[in-house]
Length: 84
Image 1: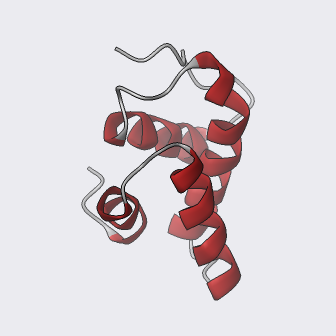
Image 2: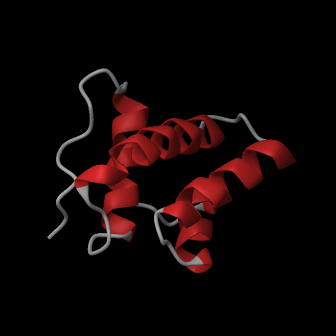
Image 3: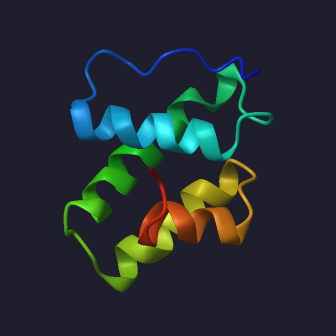
């Protein structure tokens, strides 16, 4: 069970969904001190999914998700499909 808690109330619906998808992909490693990286990762992933795509965004998403100890295969699933 993760110790991260619920997403911040100020995230919009797509960002909150990205937060939930990240938590589902890495449930055993996230702790409360990961909240700031999670916020950034959720916003970045939501932007990527909404069409903000470039090499810069690709690298940013990979790095943020990597900081959350997520394997590359899980990062790809979150970014390119199969997240629901």
